[in-house]
Image (cartoon, rainbow, N blue to C red):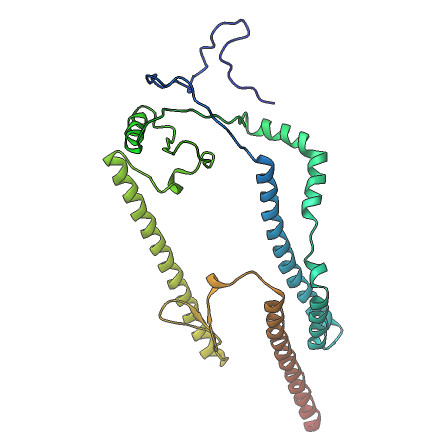
Length: 305
């Protein structure tokens, strides 16, 4: 494991490379000691993280598996001249009956078994790759005051001398979140006018970048639709999509809103299968019409001969 700078050298002398960032605040009269309690549920947090990832993997794996299965069904139906509609219908029935089993995942148990075997080795490798990253938590009590106004005034003074750390004001005697994000506390202050101006400018730039990106996306959609219109005119095919005034792709019966699509479920998969079957049957009918036309041309040629 990679080492870190120690306060003293092995000889007992002070280490000149050691930079002490854990400085002490000036003492406050009458405030020498404080009673504190801590709660650090790392194990619970880890389980929650695995749980959330597990839910994502189950949904993702199921959705991707359905896509692969339908590609395979299409291939089998085409290769062996089978009724693809009947195959899809049978598969939908199977998915409906075995939904619980298909969506069941043992990723949490597999993850635990993996960690039992590999955690020490991976932790050592991680420490080498990322140098030293401490897992030690720290806390610093920076004063106790009779009113909230006095506490906030003290915070402002402390921020001037210690801008590297967030400083929060909270009531005594209540449980508080550990090291919350400053922007989520509802009391964010940009104390310097220059910083406040910079923050507002950053928000303007982000909003402008977002609008520019949306405009480029709309232009790209319009260009693609115009190209499809030209191709449809040249080939005589029907145009299945156009674009509305808001820049959304509009189909024959509905507007395609990609942002509002939810994760694939069994019911939505079934609907997509029906559309897939229709598209496949249309393709097969086109191929049969081509074959019939070829045969008619050959017969016509033979008759002339």
